[in-house]
Length: 564
Image (cartoon, rainbow, N blue to C red; front, side, top):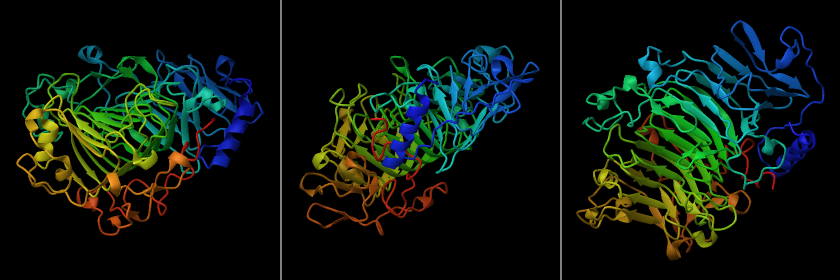
């Protein structure tokens, strides 16, 4: 801890309380309860030591407790010293849990080790990381991060009044601002779910993510060892139903360390994570790379928040087949896309199965109209845009609103379909595999189609409206989509609440500029519970509303920037 810890933590807590932010009180006690004893020495043990501990080679390893805080050196855990005990628990304490290096949970088994006979652990066979409500996990080094290996699990059960925070020490000390992305790595979970990178492109499966999609490949999914971003680690397999644990009310701040160009850690990274995992009420705040990235697998998520994310707020690829309901994305300054969906990328054939297919309902996407490297808090990742579906990705989008917080809703493209790398994405739209209903797009540049010239006159606006305008835009089942642009755009009345550019709640009444109704939230919503039982029947458009402000009390950065 830095010497100014107590003062700055108190100042930060007072600022958050004044701004309505939902961070927890980080004021530490000044009482040192460390008493040495049998677990003492360099690990700071003692009968009153509440720091995490585990048994290794017959000896107890424990963090050091001082002035209400727990600190963990590389002898407790690091990238080269992962915790492989049955479980480890980080309890709620007056202060924070601070790490000199990375928190690696479980032993990674790569292809070489597996070929030598080391088993790849499956669901629940590895180490269990338990984190109690209200805990703050602090990382001192920019290249440190949390990694959960295949077969291991995380159980981080926060609450709305006591969220779990992962952040950098500069944030706790009060020095981090919204300019400070990438102060540490982030949180990475590696699972045994499917990824189409374990595929040689010869299979002719259904593209639905079933095991049969792998039947003709030379890379059997049981031997899948795809390398993750960050330090060497592996993920992948054939269990899209696997559970990697539970995360509820978790906030990741100032993450996204860039290892090298093209190899960046995200706030939340889900590699081959299965649908048995619970992901609910999660926020990514001020990350350098993506907020939530899904590489393969079939993890579902609800109540996601991404604020001031440097790159894509929700990114998915590699055959990801998951569902998301209730997501709020706010570009308070420079960010890239609200959603970026790919199938394979990296020059590989876009038709490789399992095919990526996200189903999302009730998203609010608020862009900023800030271009790449274009002004205060802009990033080098790209222009602020809405959803982009490309490179063979399929999608279904329902009950969502895409707009801009800039004057007159000025924007870059707010919904884009791109077939530059191959025809599959627009093919899926033409074939009614990809769908969109009950969405509102209100931007100065609402729609864009780019890529393959053989698509002729595919008309995205008409596709959203049910199709049938020409042979390249055949009739489909899309209904109740509304596109507002030009003189139809109302004067900033779609999103309410928040301060300045930080509003996020859908207005009760949605009208055009002339005051006539644009969208009827009582009649025009799609009942997505009929699409899949994972979804709940919605009562409003977008991710949140005044009648359901589920972000209040635990999220950060929506009332005002933290530590300005």
